[in-house]
Image 1 (cartoon, rainbow, N blue to C red):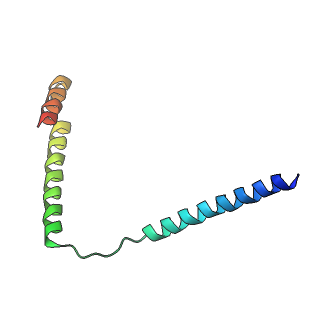
Image 2 (cartoon, rainbow, N blue to C red):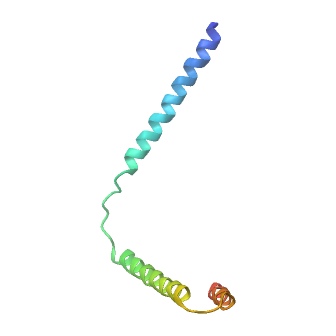
Length: 83
């Protein structure tokens, strides 16, 4: 092995270690989300989103539990997509 090959291998090892360390730091920094107080506007937005998700869940439960033919289920899904 000549000196240039050794130099390339050393640089590759340092680059690999640097990438691994930066990913490890990013993972550690993102592990615990900061505790931020919820503002009233954000709380209203979250409540509205929760209400919309509950309505979607009701629709999906109704589609899954109704005793209809597959064509009518497909038609209902398409009509709900158009809304």
